[in-house]
Length: 394
Image (cartoon, rainbow, N blue to C red):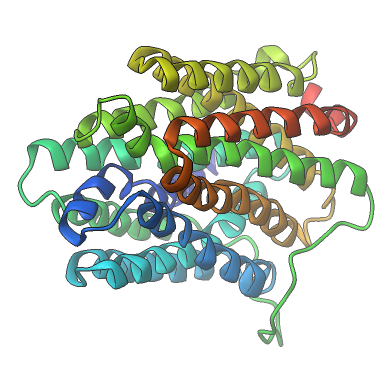
């Protein structure tokens, strides 16, 4: 491992910087609403259209790094992400926001399976759990850092709709430069030609794999509630209008997910699915109470519990799902399927929630969402428990 720490750090930094694209705009949505004069449902559409790019990228190129090499795919991802940043800054108006979000989604769809598979390659022989822990920490760490950075800069810096993206562009450039420290351990296959590829489903262990898919979808659906709807929720309880507060609230949720992934060693002799579900149920309950009682502290506590539970469930699901690609040939394809489920969960329900908020109010819509999510978690809990991978207990 002493020889691989620099490549691991370089890939992780690029991974985290790329993932921040999802959440950098979150504290800025109220400012966009004021500038472009659109409501909550349109704001959630801007948030959710990101999924269009992610899904298209995963479906068309989710397995490309298995054949074309890991590093070239990461470089292309950073370039596409830079185009998204340019659209945010240079193309004002709703159309520019939608294009920028789609480009960001395309970049992340390229990034997530390639970066996760790259880390698994670098950690070969050191255990899948170490690769999964590093990858999911970079994933959630980037998601958490994005809103905190943009919220602080928008609150106290000049040009609140420009400065956060300039700083983010600098971070992308650093991540791109750092890839020089990561030699590709899976170079382009001889004679390979691109063709559209479906996300992979492993031949063996399909029960475990589909349990992992459901785990990802549900974990990110709950995260989407907090990442996509926090500005609207804070406005509903009378605490809206502060980009810094919005960014800090989203950061707390996602940082809790990062923390549970990094400190889950004490769960190795247990089934981590159980505490993850308990955290999610408790967090959803507290979030519902907070919305009706207009309690900011209760809302934040509920968000931290949900973030911690979702992070732990995501870690377990990714480790269990990728464990089925034993020989590594289709590792990126398997990861593409897992992330496909994750981004469907994180984006599509939030669009529906935003539309419902316009018609029945934020409190009723959020309560219905929380009840539905808790019920679905209860229905799939037995399958998730059966799908607990033995390697997680090592």
